[in-house]
Image (cartoon, rainbow, N blue to C red; front, side):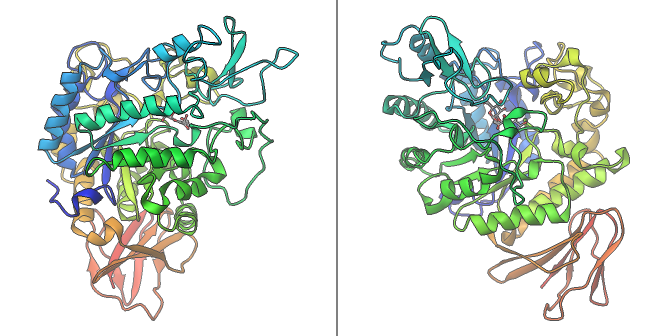
Length: 547
Ligand code: TEU
């Protein structure tokens, strides 16, 4: 298990966070959907990876239109996942195993079934009339402005009772809360306190830059291409990408709210936040604004490494633009999560590269400066499941099929035991099928194979733990052929050189004469290849040398 290695309050800096998607982790009731007791049962698996924390996707009461990202009660567990007592038991067991627990706060919007919205939509003068973003139609009856929903169609929905439109960034059933109203902020912070008092160690803040909208409801301008942009907010089949989102999100008022949020957190010890920033070309600037100064968020993640690109140029560009934009903030890097195609499938050119890419990717992620998020199943090298239209549950995919198949392909159940029905996930029919080729990669199979992807994850994360430099040491890029990623990590007396070849051809890296090469370091899965002062690499290979 991870040995304690830093100030208790600073555990998040450089932490490895394992994301659990509860619906697909482990079912204990036979209803085909994962639950909190299932998570408790499998915490040993997570702890055995040597991670610092888990992030649980939402398990709150919800009609599940967006798989729980549409909350109807922030302070209760959905019966599908269990009870508050199950949550407490899970939390206690996680803490016993030395794991911190981060939960997902989805406070930009609620479900339309939330009592706040039910009341808000009942009239124009009820006490919660202004809790959501309501606006009159234009004189011709159309929506107040041109804002769009990420999940397709206009960002406004007509309500016949109020004879007004309400705003939604996602589904029609996910109305957007009005953060300009201080009562809304107050009510949300109360729900945050509820979980802090229960003992959670932190929060992943869903769509943290979507909290506020422009009060004047100005139209967004058309998208202006930015050659420096690295992040994508939505697949290119989505007209959402045709606007610059100047007015529907990332408003300056948010910074003051994030300070309030932090002040609440700081009443408790050792709690942390990781914000999700989906802000296209502006993402890194937003991360800088939200994580600088030590009085707002602890860290953020963006969509920069969640795209199709796995080249040295791309990784260098992401990290360097981050370093330029964010001087005293902190990032959380990830290659996968519950919203994007699994990275092995994004990065491979041929099926036989699966294992190699899975190993190279986690080794790279573990050596970047920042905290890192892993997504359940990536430790098995799982590929994106190829689902039929009839199998889809994600409304986003159903809406944009077949041009975009949505997010179900990365949300299929965890395969635990090869020989069991549905690979040990559930005794009943799972809500999404377990692909055959995932069952072959089940945990019980890979545990027994010395060089499996799963054991490579354990060894690589142990390597990261052993080298303090990798947690928060400085990171500088070295001049190299553009196909090669060469950088140093340095802290205290330790300085390490890392060289990655993300191409398929052999390559070499000749370090500058001024670099005093020390002993090559053996990194799990990748031998050291130093010959006469030159580092020789195979395709999809890496090496580490002490400086
Ligand atoms: O995601 C926000 C978000 O930006 C994504 O919708 C993203 O644009 C898309 O998934 C890329 O494919 C968060 C949650 O992570 C997501 O699961 C929710 O559906 C969404 O918010 C609404 O709460």
